[in-house]
Amino acid sequence: MKAMILQGVSRFAENPAPLVLAEMPGPTPGEGEILIAVSACGVCHTELDEIEGRTPPPAFPVILGHQVVGRVAALGPGARRFRIDDRVGVGWIHSACGICDACRAGNENVCERFRATGRDVNGGYAEFMTVPEAFAYAIPGIFSDAEAAPLLCAGAIGYRALRLAGLRDGQSLGLTGFGASAHLVLQMVRHRFPRTKVFVFARNERERAFALELGAVWAGAIEEAPPVKLHAVIDTTPAWKPVVEALKHLSPGGRLVINAIRKEERDKAELLRLDYPAHLWLEKEIKSVANVARRDISEFLALAAQIRLRPEVQEYPLTDANRALAELKEGKIRGAKVLRAA
Image 1 (cartoon, rainbow, N blue to C red):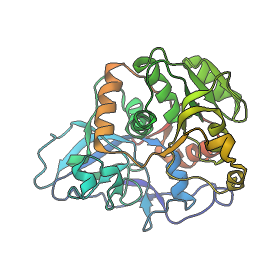
Image 2 (image 1 turned 180 degrees about the vertical axis):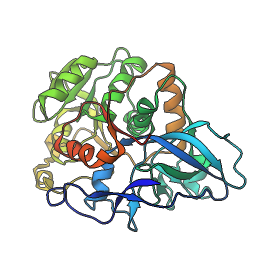
Image 3 (image 1 turned 180 degrees about the horizontal axis):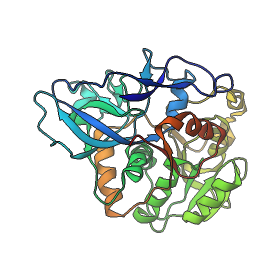
C-alpha cells in the first residue's frame, strides 16, 4: 500500500517536507480488529505536534492521521460488529485498557494505557489501516467521506470542550482560534444554545470574516477586548498568549477550556504576564481537554447528523500531505483540511 510516513522528529522551518511517500505491506487485522480501506483522513494540528516533537510517536517510522473514514475491507478473528464494505470512521482514540477505573466510568480518554491513532499505532495517511472494531464508528449517510473526516476529531473534541465549558443557553461564549474545531463548535452552539452569543478571537482577518459568516456576533484579534465579559472561553490555539488574553475576558466564575494536546514553546514567556487579580481572581477556572472518549465521538456523530452540521473542508490528495500541513502551520485555514486516499 501507499503511505505518507514520518521517519523522525524535525522542525518545519528546517524540513518543510517531513513526510515521505512509501510503498509498504498492507496491515492484517488481528483478533477483534477490522481492516479499513481509507478514503479520507483529516489533517489536525496534533500532527504538527507529533512532527515537531511536542507529543512524539514512541517509534519510527509511523503513519500519522487520526480522522479516518473508509470502508471495511476485512474482518479479523472474532470481529462481528461490522460487515465488509460498511463505511466507518476512526478518531484519536485507538484503544484503551477497558478495565481501569477511568475506562469503567466511560472516561477512556484518561486511561493510562490510552493509545492514539497515528501516534502510538499507524493511522490514516495511508491506503489501509487497522483498528479494534470497538473503536470504530458507523458514519451517518448524510455526510460525504471528506465531510465526515473532521467530525471524528475536530468535531468530537469540540463537543467534549463545549460540554466541559458548562455553558447554559443565553450565556456568552468566546472561541479563541478559528480552525477546524472552532468552526464546528460555533455551528453546534447555534443549534444547542440558540440564545447564546459567540465572540471569536482569531489571528487573521480571513478567520474573523469566516466566523462572522457562520454566525458569530463579534470577531476580533487575539489582543482585542470583546464588548462584554464572557461566561466561558474555549481556546483551540497552539500558543500561550491567547490563554492569558482569554482569562482577562472571563466574567466572575467564568471558565477557560483549553482544547489543545500541547502548547508550543515559542511564546511561553507570555505566562510570566499572568496577573492573579486580573486573570484568575473572582473564582475563574481553567480546564484542560484530554483526548476524547468513545462516547464523545458516538454522541457527536449523532448530533451532527441530527442538526445537519456541515464542515467546511479543503481537500488534498494523499501525496500532498506535506503541503496541507505546511498551510496549517502557516495559518492558511478555512474550516478543515482533508486528505483523499482514494
